[in-house]
Length: 133
Image (cartoon, rainbow, N blue to C red; front, side):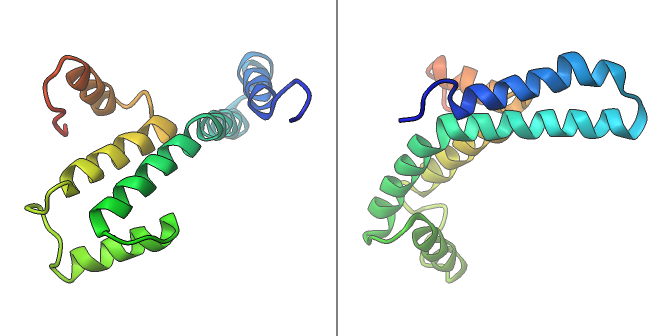
């Protein structure tokens, strides 16, 4: 275990520095690149927080869906191959749910402010099945 501050806290501090202190002093391309850098740090922080659990859940779903074991990368490759070969499709039980859950987990890390993602979460919390928008 590392002593404080954690990697997530360090990343958050640098992103805050960029937004609060550096970006107001910058203009043009340099300001744009500072904003991009701050956004990248936000993504890295969310990945550190969420990816472990999301990857474990995805791995478990893939093992059940494919009936085999392997690394997450191997199972995803097999899934793609089986979809491409026509062995799995929209009628395959659990496939659509797996793809939707995987998409939501990726958006939680990459674009949690994305309006369609937020609507999907709101729909799921209200008991209605999420719909892609």
